[in-house]
Image (cartoon, rainbow, N blue to C red; front, side, top):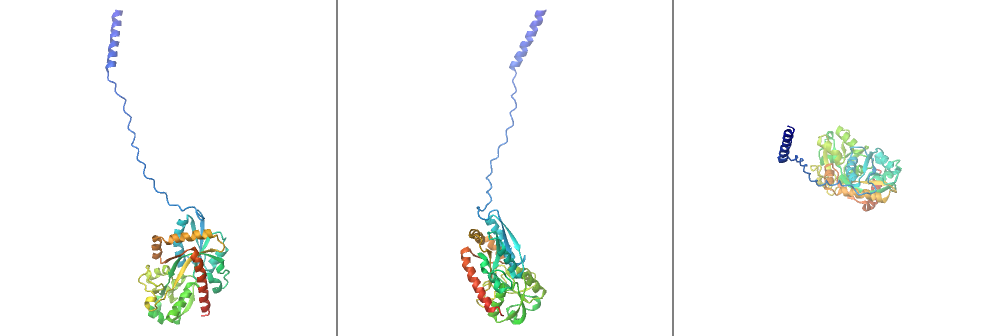
Length: 345
């Protein structure tokens, strides 16, 4: 009995072994395929960063000696926004008004001559000490840097005046009609003198501290005639609150092509524009001033800037560092002689 039982157990074991050996083993499930690696995209071009220079990463102050929103301010902010990109720096505009521009320029002369402070400058500014009382500087207090624009004026008349064209403008020149001047002995004054010489008309000088105030009084009828810059005048013209008589450039301006020039209205050859530029305190490092001037020059060559400037009524006209040294002296002498010949008017 034990033998029989043992035999049965052994037989069962053999059968189990055969079944196990003959069974087909199921393979382990294959691992899920790894997601296909995406091809690396082309790296985005690095933003253009100005080469290291005197101004890279620094902050420059630019003094505008006239109020915010005026022609000087508009032109200066327009160019400085682009100069920042060229130099890789920050430019802070500081409007310091009063004294026909002399207060802001006096502030510049007190700044350290380290190349970190500039000021907006124009035709008559170097002669401030002979044209305005109490001005503490002369032409040698400034280091000329560059010129970036030469802007015409628009001869603007109030609606209340009845002046609608050049003929009525000349007819009103009886010595009593008020001609608003946006700053004593700025280019506004010289334009008035030039216009009177060319036409034989005469107007009564009324001095304001900036072009914005002139335009306001023309719109209100408190001033008869004024000569703001294109950037200052267009809003009043477009709103129908003042009458544009003429523009003082040799050719019509693309920002206001419907306004005729003085020259084409019977005064051939008449042209009067005010240049805009930058100066530093005397003694500023030449290396820094040249770098700043070159950046302004690079901006003035860009079509995008020229177009934006034209739309704002700013006429780009660049003179670089070396040529501006000569221009500065010649302009100073010319303005001085003209002032001395007309100061007693």
